[in-house]
Amino acid sequence: MKSSSRTKQIVAGLISGVVLGLFLKAVQEFTDEKVYVLLLNVDYVPMLNRITFPEALEFGIHLLISILVSMILGARPRSKAFFILAGMVIGIVLYPTTLLSNRTPGLLDFQAIFYWLVGHALYGYVLSIFYTKIKLPR
Image (cartoon, rainbow, N blue to C red; front, side, top):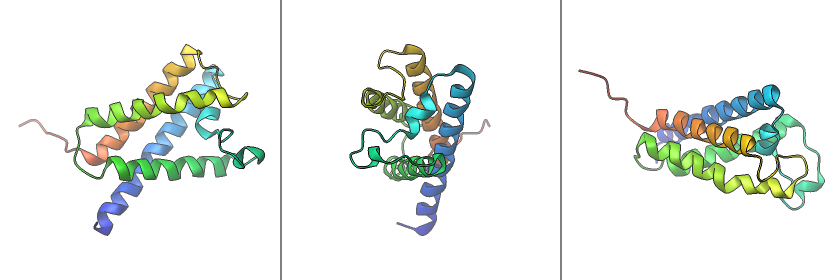
């Protein structure tokens, strides 16, 4: 793989991850839904759940995961819809980790689920900007 391609994947993951984080942080600030806490939550990871990490380090872990997702999803050409759907699927798969923490929204908190899925669709959309060609009108 070319280094320019790897750089693109890293930048795409960083920017998409930051957009998701800022979106969920804003939602949490305005609604009190703990979706940003859920994003940064590591309560379900053995050993890590015993340590209280600073927010910046938790966000850094989130960004590393975002870069990894970017590298996997961006490995070959895909449609914009694929990235949006993939972002939502990731959100659906991760949401049940809320059961493993008392700091995150409840499993059936539909408002939190809505914001969580919108955020992950937004993540997929931003990621798609880096990997799909924009068709200009002729």
